[in-house]
Length: 526
Image (cartoon, rainbow, N blue to C red):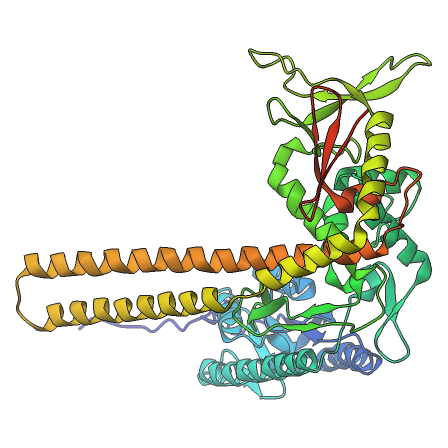
């Protein structure tokens, strides 16, 4: 009969410590608050003090430290530096037990909390959640943690949805909130609405004027830096994206488009641009404007023009990409003559003058000559201002009559819906009824071809409606601009040139035909 002697276990399989070890358990505390308000800060300090004393009061425990995160949300662990440091120390064997207030203080995301707890458990590190009375090495620990974490996660979802509802209610009420610390030109007023900071507003107006004077975003950055004007973030350098954002933000004309972005994941706090998934609200006159609305609109049209030109637009003055060669249709570009002596001047000539097989016959012009001819054309235009405005108003009435176009759009939309249903029916019948596959494919291809034809026509009609609507807006803007300009112009003005002239065609005899944004053409000689 063999003799069997039991050798008792000497290592705790969970803690990996000797079962009869006299060594104290190394214990750390974890404290976190989710905001930085005074009340929560007091709670934060109290938590640190409480866990320090609590751990030190246990003779069988050895105090390591209290790890902390202040002003951090608990819905995930990505940005919680104190938490990450604690877990790293625990996995490095510096901690045996972590004590914290509750599961919700540890993590409100079930996946985060369970993954972390299991990782700690595999490395012999236990957690104690005081409020729930849970030790993770207890047999019931993981089940309780799963339940509590799920409850905490639902609480986070509820809080997030309540915040989202509050924000959308605020949007629907037309309430405007700005990130004032980094929003140039405004501060929070006494009534809670944006109030203008005049010193900063002057910088915003300068940015708009420089853009309409022909400068690019990079050129505006350089100009502001040379003037020593700090960026909205207080830096000495400006970025092109900041300039673009200022130039395209409707809040500078006193309006507000609300809910441009929305939260798609309450756990990750991920935001995405609103492309129609949730409602948006446009509030006109929601707060004092810094930039005249018409000037803002002119800037948007100039953005569109430059985008269409692409790399053609260099920003070397307001005449850039507006002077057109009669011979080849290309743009005139600027060149400096006598750059190192007293006769220095800027001239304009066709960019393709010497690159085509047949040399362009259009002349070289200096800036002053172009400006003088424009002033002549402008003054001639303004003599007929009333007549031009009446013509523009008549054109607007014609453009705004969408009755026939809207009927055709409705008809094509109905056609696409009908054909789409026919395709669905054909597919369903083929799946449930035995039939000739050759006949089915022929029918299917015929229907899909019909759908594609209808869809293309619908797209064309909708694009035409958009084009006419934009053309109407442009004419309306031109009328307002025309009414506000001086009846006579004696000196050159970059802004008037930019907002009034679409292009200027240079002829071989040195004359120029100026084409204004309403289509009016006026020819001026040198």
